[in-house]
Length: 211
Length: 126
Image (cartoon, rainbow over all chains, first blue to last red; front, side, top):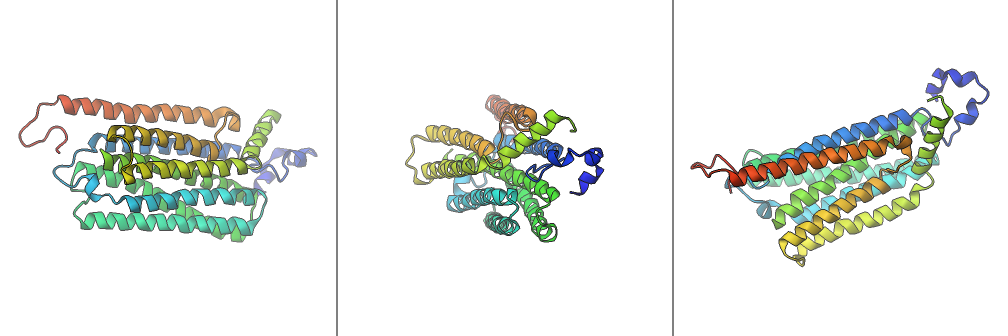
């Protein structure tokens, strides 16, 4: 609401018609597009990491190969958690549009817990791998694996911090227009991370095990 | 931003994020679950065809799932933001394919055509 005060049209009598409550991104259009461009550039970062992994994915240096070290049950669980978190975030959005703060916060909290579980299991997996001697410095394959999956995990961690901030701010500001704009951006970020994970579980884990 | 047509574009985008998306989200969720379970089942049960075919199938399913997520979860369509999100997405998709496909293709041929050296400093060490 505060950015409306900067609008020179605020004095015009038609202004209220143009900016009703159901216009969710009053002035947010540029933000949404800008955030989309950021996501696309982030996709390019992951593209280069996937390319690097693809190039060295069989450079085992005599070390462990994917079939020996990847626990697909754990990966399946992790995939389910992240996909579920994407779905629960989608469940929060209609409540946000309708201005129901309580339900929005509840769905976001569930999303956050699922994301936290995903991150915990990923760190557990990394710990297991390093304990087995499959550490990043063992081979080019493992360096690329830890870089690619670790970068995705770092993104999820940032998403969790952002989600926590949103939960706190929802308590303070409710569902104001800036809050809706931020939540739309966060939902795009979260869904984007799930899309990257599709590439990870297919290209790194499943393809690694069958090749 | 103050022009009428742009406000209209914003409104159209708001509609996609709001009313029309709930059913799309449900369908997308169902498709995403199926498209995730099938490749995991194929690989983990080892019921699938020969490894080469299984690989082709899981990559195809991944591509379909990415499209499902982009359409149903990220609500990408031809109208939102006046088509700029779609344009940016298509541009990025081209670069992603070039980067990954090109790197893997070029480096694969470099590795295959490289003379084997004692000490194994060239090519992938297996």
